[in-house]
Image (cartoon, rainbow, N blue to C red):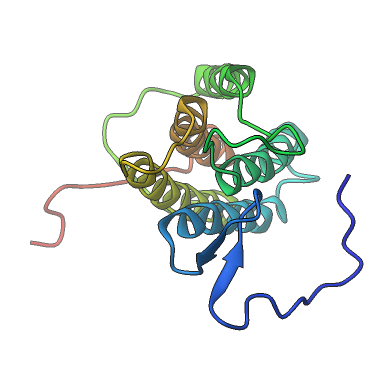
Length: 193
């Protein structure tokens, strides 16, 4: 259970922050960057959801679940697996969450016509916002993978799979938001030469 009765603690005033296991890290630490960018992706999805509720309740429900999962992912990344005994069981992304994303990708993608070109971000405001969320998610993925490659850091395989699938979901969701691809803006190579 989370209890937030005091918003500021002054603990970060020196440029450090606490991880879930109590470790102190600089705010520019790669792990902090990774879960901070996951939070940024969550915010971008929240902006996209402003226009999905009444217009696309199926998509809104998917994105609501994803936002909750992204808090799980942030918690996963915030509590490194150091092998130390903790007073609590750390929250970790699990394969079931990845599987659900794959099912949702497949269901949305089944309604779309095949692409013959790359899609430019745009079409509808919802699609454009989902493309922003997709690119922030890709940045989070790059940071998480970089973190996982550090010899002293551990990142669960499910966390990496989840963030990779999420950018795919956001791509097909953007096409779904563009009337199942009918309003997609396609790239024309060399158009402005």
